[in-house]
Amino acid sequence: MAAGCRFPYGEAMRRIVEGVRRFQREIFPQKQDLFRRLAGGQAPRVLLVTCGDSRIVPDLLMQTEPGELFICRNAGNIVPAYGASTGGVSATIEYAVVALGIRHLIVCGHSDCGAMKGILYPDTLRAMPTVAAWLRHADAARHVVEALYPDRPEAEKLELLARENVLAQLANLLTHPAVAARLVGGTLDVYGWYYEIGTGAVLAWDGASNRFVPLEAGEQVPRASPRPRGVEA
Ligand code: ZN
Image (tube, rainbow, N blue to C red):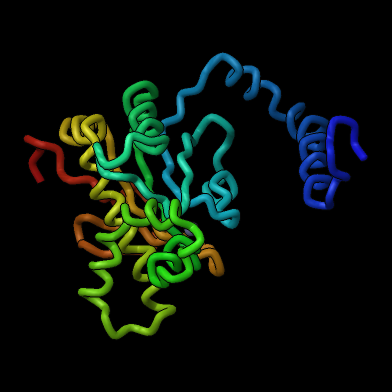
């Protein structure tokens, strides 16, 4: 038994601690300059709102380094509308937009999402009243799926719901004053993504064509931002 720990190390914690040691021994020395620079402050340009799901590993998926992504994670990648809940998500977004001055805000949902399953099958949430209450912030997505795709098979509905939820959360995002003010001035862009765990594919909402399109490298990244005021098409 490890000193200071009431329980013997399980395999999961052993792996975690060994990982930390390996990071300190092998990875940290390789990136020492980066960490020295970051020790004095951060200046991320991107805020990522995504699900807490263990299969989403942002720095792996986006090949980013420490200091690049400011991340807000929660069950279902939800952003409560302004005023609906003064909680950690709203505070994190406000801090990222106002204090850090982030330029890009990505809301990323994913396939096989447990939160989306909870929305589709509310009976499974009976023992989780807090989750059930939280997922009400995604009610708009549920209603859109029911209206647009009532007869689709369940598996397809789950995927459609995850995508519609990204759009519903983007709409909620626009109710936040700090976000609205930056968007209208054209100094912030928002993006809606859907990540497919089994294939690695990422779909991005393209506000110009009103549909999800495969994310591809290039100059034109599909955006979900409304057009800034006073800027011609
Ligand atoms: Zn999820």
